[in-house]
Length: 359
Image (cartoon, rainbow, N blue to C red; front, top):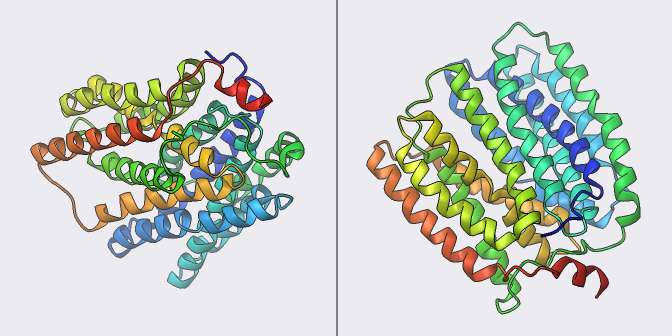
């Protein structure tokens, strides 16, 4: 059990707020603009493409030029995106959406860079940062359905700037160093294979996330519970991996999620338990990629977001509409993910972090 994962954990909480605000702003705009039937399909697809895919490029730049504060840049872009999105004309809305997506990509990459570099191989920091986004998504969706003025949302985006500046304190001493302590992939497997399989797991997770049977989800409160559970699961995955081992939590969470997901179509409590377990694997796939790409955590994070886009994009064009089909697909994909994780994750060792830090 690792008892030192609390070190520099403040960076995770600082970027948890930034991530929360980022998603509030973005999903406020999405919620406001998808009411039109033309926008209903186009806007979310464009958003996913522009917010997810560029993160690999921005991550690569951030790795090469670590002194660039993409957290501050992203917050400013988010503010500008809200202002332009408030223009009633269609060109203004799409320009605003593009800028908003770039701001989203910048804050995500910055959060990954800071939390991964200062965590000394722990997963809790990045898990807390990423998990907070789920709370922001549902908050933004709900606020978008109110009479909340655009200027207030634009101002909210700027509140992330002092948090991004403060977080640099944690990153300052690690800019020129690789991400020490990340050593979770099996040395028996070629690094390129680890990267391919880890991204494949992310793709599968992205697709499965939309295919989870949740016929019980009919009210606002139930939707809030769904997103809150996702956020808690993402955070818990990193914390528990630090406490009990990456491989144990990866296999346990994936296997434990399946029966609850399959049996929870009409049962909210059962389904939410499955969603929580399912969400716990998020930080583990990122840790695997960083283990291979120790000098490029921004690029590693960007690969996960490309994987998410590849997993979610097919949903816009094709869905399995029957419970039987969804359950079959989820079962098959879960088995494949568990098999991949068994192959590429190294055996948990009690002193692996200590050995990495001193050897």
